[in-house]
Length: 265
Image 1 (tube, rainbow, N blue to C red):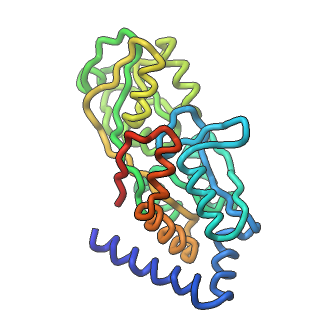
Image 2: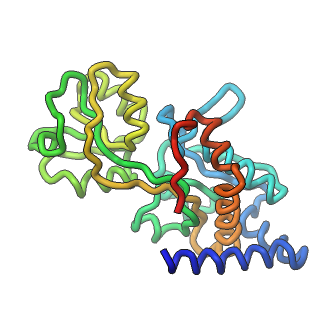
Image 3: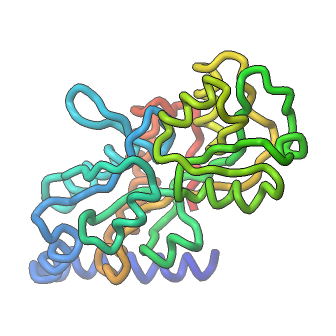
């Protein structure tokens, strides 16, 4: 924690210098963080909700990353452009392709080799939901040969579930919607995801059960492509301010998370 605080202080000093010392510094920041003249925010679309997923609306998109990205673009003085993906794995795979400038997604050691992360703004419990009528009530009962567990492909939760389960099989699928249908029809035994999202799913699929245990903590943070040091300093400063000035709380409340406490690091 002390090391992170030291890095954050240094980052804040860099961005403060860039934004206040000269027009040249601000121009250099925009050239790095918004080279197309727009802030391209990578989002993943799903009805799952929570602090990571975004959803389609009649007028565009909604979600915590949507609101944060819009406010970040406003601070930079550029338009926002949402770059849509099906899951966080696709966002990760595009990190070195130059197709997005900033994103908000779950962090893990593998992703830290692909992009640079700023402050964490959500900490969530990952667990499993079991199919309607399943007798499974614990991790030990779930982790048996022949049990089929689904996860969203190439995500931190999928990697966590594969490390956690020694006997059950874990299969990745591209979208939340696909897994929802499989679970509803009883074609899989369980689905690994964050507890808040699974609780919402349980209300939509009668007879399912969210297991009480937790197999990992999922942390979600702002991120930029590797080597974008000025951008990292800016987004780190932005997220620190958002947590203290009420912007992050407002984004949570506007997206159905009024009962969810802020857990930042």
